[in-house]
Image 1 (cartoon, one colour):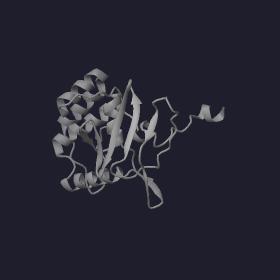
Image 2 (cartoon, one colour; image 1 turned 90 degrees about the vertical axis):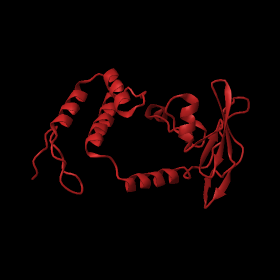
Image 3 (cartoon, helix red, strand yellow; image 1 turned 90 degrees about the horizontal axis):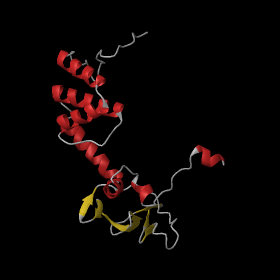
Image 4 (cartoon, one colour; image 1 turned 120 degrees about the horizontal axis):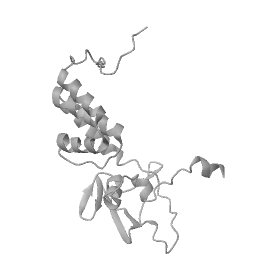
Length: 189
């Protein structure tokens, strides 16, 4: 039977011993726990150099706790970063077939071109997606690696949807390539 760890006690890493407790890091983590959301947002700007729109206290705390420890002991290895980049690049190719659900005249969703590949539908380079939002029509072109919108290349449709709306969106949902699952109450009705 293993002893239960107390908060603040270091946990052994997967490949070996934990880093030795560092009083300055432990003090910084304790200070983060006591901060308000606004103070955490300011600390984010200080530690990362960019502002955050997040207002989720737990998420901000975890991200800042990671950064404090990263600054003290170092972050991910270059090999791990390269592997994560490879995985992110592969994700762009995994799309479901487009579902045309828009009605004429609603300015909803329009897929101008799509092709089949290996039994699954995917967006081929040159595919143009169109979506009305904010009183404008937004057109996105699929590239071999990424998506072009407004003269810029984005890694994913989610990044394009975020650029258009200013909020976090599932790109496939925003452009009508998948449908939102009904909520429990809606499904029961």
